[in-house]
Image 1 (cartoon, rainbow, N blue to C red):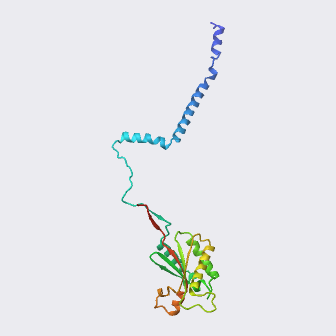
Image 2 (tube, rainbow, N blue to C red; image 1 turned 120 degrees about the vertical axis):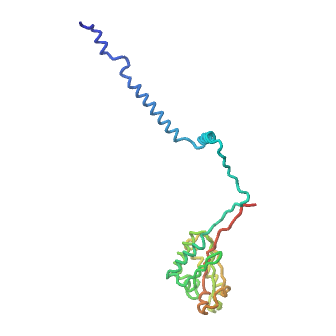
Image 3 (cartoon, rainbow, N blue to C red; image 1 turned 90 degrees about the vertical axis):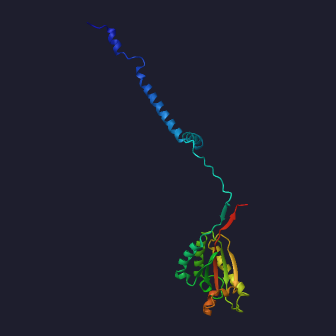
Length: 244
């Protein structure tokens, strides 16, 4: 039995719109991908200020007995600040003792006092006899010293000293006071020339502190130690109270 011709034709002919059916699946996939990326962006863009109320709400709901911590200032304790705090003197003393052990610092001496350490440079290490300008080797030593001191906040003072013998008639200086002050100023000048950034206090004592040297020392050694320049490194750290 032969089938009518129109029966074969109906089986082989495509249905209307069947060729675009794949676009429905693609649209669904694109919509899902778009939703996925929107979710990713929303999770990355959450602001702490917006999220904090939600967290607090959950915390109160699941732990209602949690005590709320409120910081309160202690009225019995004054608030203190430390301005221009300097490095520890014990730390600095240990560093400079190691440096003074080298041959180029021969004759220099370090003294640890309550509020400072004092680096004493004998005049014959820094100056030629009767001169007030440091020699070439002393200039290099002072430059190295100023580089170290520039890295800390401690203030420094430079003081010149002399022995009791009066200056000679040929000296360009009227007294030991002027000589000791000029030598201290010359060392301070070398500090500034080496790039030391802070002010330096300069003092001249002449032989005003000669009696601080031990009288048990031989006279020549005592006079040699009297002719010196002291570089004092102070223990800075002025305490300022905010209490009324």
